[in-house]
Length: 396
Image (cartoon, rainbow, N blue to C red; front, side, top):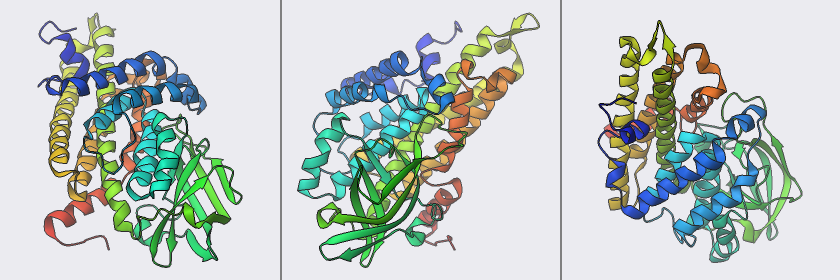
């Protein structure tokens, strides 16, 4: 470790002591999450990633850790203080982006939908168990033929049949659904958009694990088919009538993904710096070469810029009770783009070893490709920000 830079700064790439300025309780929660991930997840995740298997056994203990800090289920969405959740996403991204997606789908999307749009009975039924992760949640919006254009192109439909609803359609990419106790399904209805709570085992609800992925392999994404899926009227989320309601939730998710991207970039920087100081070529550690230092400095440049941006976003969230879609999309756009470059630079510094899981970069490098695309592609987020600053929509 360099004598010129304190070890703690190298480990966190925190040149301006951003994390040291966190409230003591929030910082303690961040460090507890980090300790859990390093002790329980880091030793096993490469094997799970290679096999395409999620570490289900860790879920109850991780749920207990979160509940201990965050307490009772939230009664509204977004939460009053999002910073602990943001820092948790950073730490998850740093060690295992697949688990980061598991938590995001379960907590931010499924729980968030029930908290924001559900009835009192739905909240009472699901939120306590979801909070502790004794029940698992999933969320399904994207379809095989509707991704970026979900607001207009959604093909899954829900129609009334007496007092019941009948759902027909397909969903793709939905995380956690292979093990979920409840899945939020979004469908077109006569009066706009409807969200429905579907319990595992409901007839007409078929879930199949999606294979062939090169990123987030430990995350179990699925294809869902709803064929004549009959649900009682009580299964519909009463607080949703149009896509704009869900867009507010998606904006919250985009910021969370930006923090995840920062976490991935942090993990890659740490692993790359460690490797460069240990790896010797031509009788010297490669960290002593000018071209390698140039790459490390560029990586640190991106990390520091992302940290500053996201901490500013967190302060704005706390003041305003959330971020509008322009600010949220800018966070996701900037952080995904910069983190992707950090991953590419780190993989390059490791040379051939950069494609081996054992050196701590390859898995994060691959997973970053998924992060770059979900919660809005670069193109979609660019157009959202462009619309926000010009007042003109350029989507079509």
